[in-house]
Length: 304
Image (cartoon, rainbow, N blue to C red):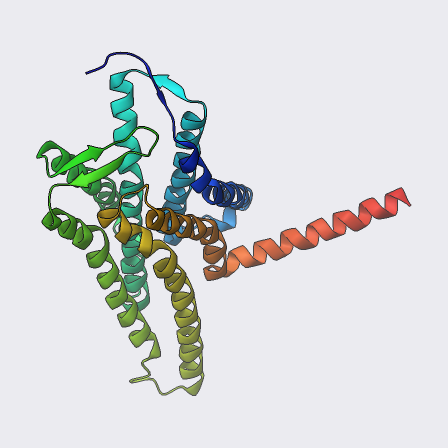
């Protein structure tokens, strides 16, 4: 095994294939930056019941930063010794899967808390704070345990080639199927079931005699349904292909490059979608827009 310093870089074709991702991630970084600036400047937007979605957006931001870190290291052809190369290769191969893994469970936690609030009128964030903390710990610790266990038992290994991205190579199809169930099928199916129960409860008028309450419930049902369809349609169409491809397709292949681009597009859209889901963000955006327009007119009057 060589102990010399070796440049950590990509081939020219790899750099070329990543140009669309570079553009999309650059746009995403700006949009996420504006979102977090708004969140810092507007305290009324920082609500406990949105914590799961805020953490979800943090993982989006981590995915974007991950891309730029690896792109910068490869572009600079940083010379690394074997240990540093191994660490960076493991990070490159597993970090994206880890972040996507926890995203599916963050959305599941958000919908479980939302279900308890809608159906049982329970604010789980105030009533059971320790349960929330334990759930956070589980979500962040469970995926790396799976990844580390598979590497340590040789169920998974690192695939590497000069000039290409490091990837995870699995021993057999059974490991890939287990990963697929744990990281995708279980959280997605449970999410769909919980969302269905929420919509069923909101649409139910059993035992309600007031016509006004029935009208309000139906309005709430339409809003919830529209928000759910919007968010999860975009999420499933753009996020799912990359999550599925990761288990069965090499990350350097053309199909994987395409699914990665779709996943990064989803990262870019997430802050805007969450802004649509929570009307307070839209109100804040409108207020900011009107403020900027007024300032622009004032500046124009001064210069006249």
